Amino acid sequence: MKPVAANSLYETLIIYIMLQNAVVRRSVQMLENLFDKFGKKVKFGGRVLSTFWQPEDIHKASEESLRALKLGYRARFIKKISSQFFKGELDEFKMRELPREELKQQALELYGIGPASVEYLLFEDFYHCDVLETIPPWEQKIFSKLIFNKKLVSDKKLLDFFKKRYKGWEKLASHYIWEDIFWKRKTHQIDWLEKEIRL
Image (tube, rainbow, N blue to C red; front, side, top):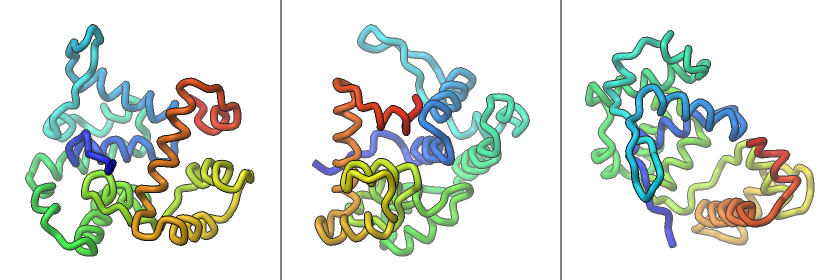
């Protein structure tokens, strides 16, 4: 029942950077632009899919060419991260051997990655199921509605809820609640959620 990372650490970091300060529609557009420029198309199950590029591809690209893909400030972030992977400055397998606090500090030093992204990284890629100290504003709105049926409650109130009810599994529980509403969205119209997603 625990999450299994479907991406490499590099791919996960690129996705996290594209999710920063953007509604879902904008994140999807930026990722599609990147896949159209750098990804490769493959056919699988009657569908055409895009594969991720290699860090070297972004390392070699100019920041201006990345900004032309409408990435904004994220162009600098993904270029720096790609260069770090290409040059061997980041090794996800060595990172997996680190104690949690050391891993957290090293992840916080990644260029363009903040506390919320680090928590997701510790959870999704390194399987720490209890790490929940930050709730981003967009998630705060959705959790407020789901858990308290209110437009907005404080992040402290939400964190207290998870810590009291799901002690030791806080992030995993929040992940399940989050996934559940998005699976429901596939078969049921949820008007208030659509206003938040803006996909």
